[in-house]
Image (cartoon, rainbow, N blue to C red; front, side):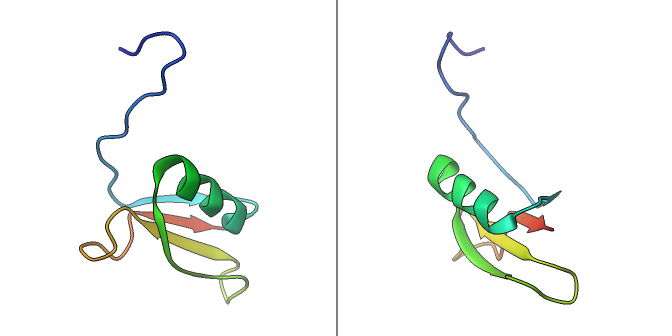
Length: 68
């Protein structure tokens, strides 16, 4: 339980995939809020725009995948 106004602390994240209207904008959000690193993606590809983020790029290729 968190006190009023305190943000919850993220203790782990493991291979989450989400659809987003603008993966690049959402990637920026997760970079600034959770400290994730953008490790890949594309503005437009055969499957649409994508962004891949990792909390520890040296150990995990990605933890979060965002798809348009």
